[in-house]
Image 1 (tube, rainbow, N blue to C red):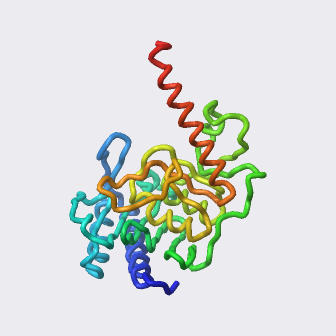
Image 2: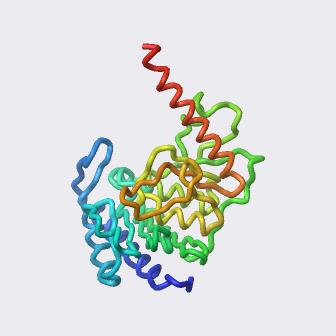
Image 3: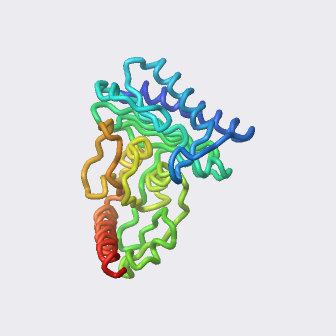
Length: 276
């Protein structure tokens, strides 16, 4: 890849791979961990990787802004055109239980758009990378979304129970495929053709999806907010209003299915007090 931000992509990859190697070392030694919110674990490794990434990336590009899950946010980043957007360990639960479904995520955002992104998943031996307009790769090899159309069951990295739920409905053929704890790696599965689509009805943090959303797009997929809107990054509140990522053939039907599910869930919640 030799586009406009090739140098920044190389920086992001080098930093992500170094941080990923450190994560494996710390994991082998054992790390402290605690909850920073309900159901939201963090470890001493998350914080150590955050420091390493910030030191390396901002030393190379000191004029860039910084937004990371593990750094206290400030409004100073909103005044910067270019921003490093980082999740030191996406999928901390898998990291803590010794499962491979976690990754270091580093993205470069310029004027609200992801221009370069890297996911380093050392427990899987995988590094995904993309530059806008330059395609996507895994371990240096080009990847593409699957060519499967909507005439076959959609493969989703999702809990099988979701597909058996009345909210999903019996008229939409789908099958569950392995679901890494890392949302970024679930997106990577779509990018490499191991899954056809991903749906996430809940808001998610920008750092969870920034790098991976570009990887999917550069692999030929479509990525939008759950209502179909374009995702912008480095917003004052760094959240994404749900997510749909899919092959071009699957994006519209999966988006419609998610909308139906959310409507049915809202109706159920509205009726619940009356039933009680």
